[in-house]
Image (cartoon, rainbow, N blue to C red; front, side, top):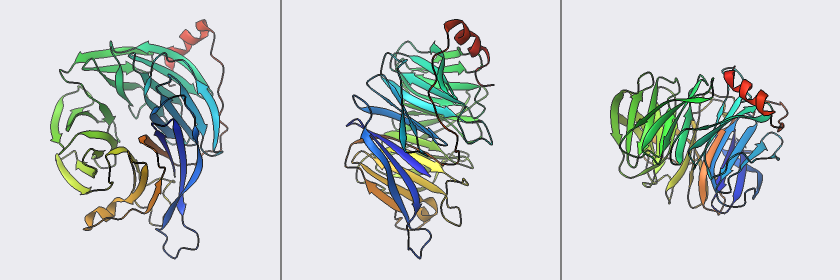
Length: 343
């Protein structure tokens, strides 16, 4: 398993999670540094990872790409003209390498890239104001966006165009699909709304104690959130109740959560359910969520970047495929290619 974190100080941090050598306890893990350097000209706002590929977006309007398996930088994509606010990879089922990279920016536009190699396929204007977050459906056929215009947008990734747009009356900061793609979640300050993916029907609402700053979907209808309460909360979205929580998981607000379960990235013999979290004081911790049932949960691994972390992403390193950045297609070919982007 690998983790990548972005910081306000422009630094990108890469770590690999592995068992501690000479430890009699197979659950004793360590976060080994892969790389760290100031990859952007200004603060990093978002990161994403899938297989050996990782990406970061910043307020310098650029996307930087990384090969986690080789612990190296691949270069940058410069197709946005505003702060990159959200990144998401789409990886088809049973494959270890992403097929597409989708990015959103503060001018309301979304860029769709082919990830083999990284080539821009289409830029679509989705919102009138900046996009706060985007989520790609597990099928790879559509994406949801939420923006500062208090609207929800839907992007048809097959055709490369906006297919739905509606006003919600409140500004959502986060949007996520569940693991099966049957539901999606939107975060508005301390409230979380659960909707049917088919028709956006409101199913239920959850209310956290304080503002939610990050969220990640887990298996069996679980949704993990973190934020200003400094805790990690696991919500059972089927019942609308808290399943369990790790109180005071950090000494500062939680800015990122990554869930990895039943995956080749799991490092212990029993394939534990791993959750990684990062806080604004620079600390990254890895938990076995079964420990949340105990009175005091202790992290399996921990590292301190000593920087102001803004975002966190994770991936398992399974593919040996070589990553590369391609050249932009001529315009006529570019337009034609977007007719079936994810096929």
